[in-house]
Image (cartoon, rainbow, N blue to C red; front, side, top):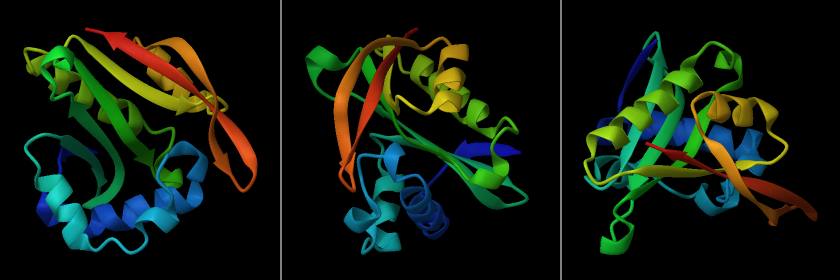
Length: 165
């Protein structure tokens, strides 16, 4: 298992995995497949080449099998914060440690950014494996966003979590 920061050259494989994530686990993301289905590799290339975000990928035999994005806040009053977004591991790779390594890599990146003191994320309140992973890495729930998303008429709550570095 290799973990590394993604760049524009990874745009096509990132697009494929992102679309898989949005289709297979729509309750885990505020974006939907319908929102992103027309995004081209170029759209993702620009995102991955951004100096303001850090997207890491887990590779198994050269195949991208998991991703996570760390986004430090840009505003002066919020520079002590960063957010984790777009965490996903393909179902065949779950339970093998790649998700843990991805989140640990994002945490390590945040620690290297001198201004970041805390990392925030949201997780579907019914996603026990993900909540367990985040808790095992030190994240604590500080609130619940009731009815945060509505998918096909069904509401989903999200837990709000934070890790203080």
